[in-house]
Amino acid sequence: MTDPSVDPSEVAKFEAMAADWWDPNGSTAPLHAMNPCRLDYIVAQICGEFDRDIRVGRPFEGLSVLDVGCGGGLLSEPLARLGARVTGVDAAAKNVEIARAHARDAGMEIDYRAVTAESLLAEGAAFDVVLGMEIVEHVADPATFLRSLGALARPGGLVVVSTLNRTARSFAAAIVGAEWVMRWLPRGTHDWSKFVSPEDLAGMMREAGLDPVDRKGMVPDPLRGQWRLSDRDLSVNYVMTGVRT
Ligand SMILES: C[S@@+](CC[C@H](N)C(=O)[O-])C[C@H]1O[C@@H](n2cnc3c(N)ncnc32)[C@H](O)[C@@H]1O
Ligand SMILES: [Mg+2]
Picture (tube, rainbow, N blue to C red):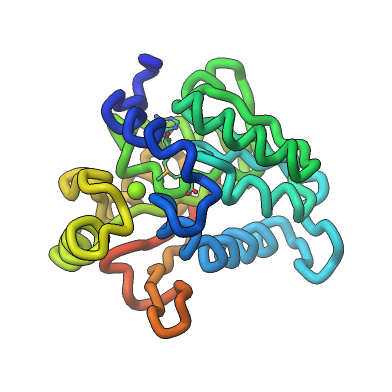
């Protein structure tokens, strides 16, 4: 795939991980560990913006969600269970196959496609919610990518993006810790120079016609084996929401 957001060496890394998507102990373990925390965040942002009540059966009925860089569908599936009409796209065709097979086995309807954000945009597609989770640090140019995500959201819609901050701590935690010492991720999964600070990401959101209304850190809690949201610590992993103006 030669679309502008695609960095071929990055997509090749994720193709190689395809078989592992739904194995919580494989190379996607950090995404599985983070999943409840980031899902809580996304759900709260959607409920707030669209005035939905999470206590009712399928609170996201009638909302369209686009999951860009969906991988195996770790977020697409729970959002579809909450009633959203979910489209998942990924530049790595093998990931899309895995995602499709998993949804089929679970009896779920999710529209998975092996395309990029910019090719959907060219089709004139628009969504209530656009996710770009753990992908900004893997695309060819984050500012251009954010513009595609912004243009894919309807006015009043949400764009939720998570990525890694560019700090000494993120080098120590995400590269030395997670790759070299703990070996949670294959060595070379992340390139520190592609990490983006929250200030820069907020600037890219504004350039993309998005109002960056919320940001939180995501922090591992090793004792509980889970992650939690933090108002103060955005020094490594963080998530940000923009509202399309
Ligand atoms: C770290 S994974 C995150 C997967 C998923 N969003 C999650 O958080 O569980 C990054 C994903 O983005 C995909 N990807 C990388 N560059 C892309 C691009 N330009 N367009 C679409 N998908 C891309 C990769 O193939 C990979 O599946
Ligand atoms: Mg990553």
